[in-house]
Length: 115
Length: 114
Image 1 (spheres, rainbow over the protein chains, first blue to last red):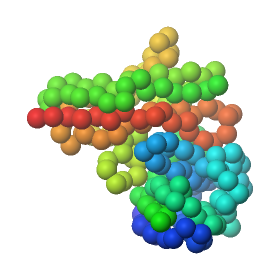
Image 2 (image 1 turned 90 degrees about the vertical axis):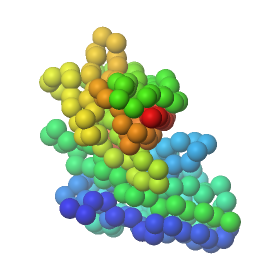
Image 3 (image 1 turned 135 degrees about the vertical axis):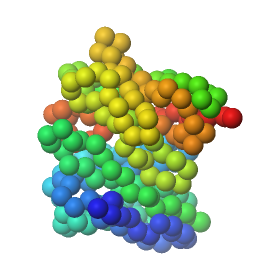
């Protein structure tokens, strides 16, 4: 399996622009998670989906952030408009919850820089 | 509130010496516990987990962890550290019935020196 795939790996944009991050989870997994990691705040859960349905978005910092999962193999995280404080590494992770699984598998991350 | 704590921001150990990275948890019910490692500029990698059964679990790269219910701990250990083990380590907990998410600790930076 190719693992969790994220694109782009690096994104540099100007304040006010729209940014879209993409994620392809591991095939067969039923849960998908978006995280943000910064030196100041550490690792933060933004939102997660079960069977393509958003379950908990309490970690989404503001209305500028939105996430979708139109099908089991694709999810997006959108920031509009972007701000310099959004600069971080954004990770997508997926898991198969049930049985004796539960562990999450992380993608390589997207490093976002907003200038 | 359900939580997991990593009391040490950084652990330093000499290569060849045993290493321990500490994790304690505060949850109701029977937790599922996990360890992850993050190398620079990489995503988190799953190392090992405790769901049920033997309290000593073995994982990738020679790491192991011991679940201690009375002390509510799940410390990560390795008998002989390598310089290549230097990385950021995260403990995490899954609460059955509490949604499908993991709650992560703040991470411990492990530095293994020659």
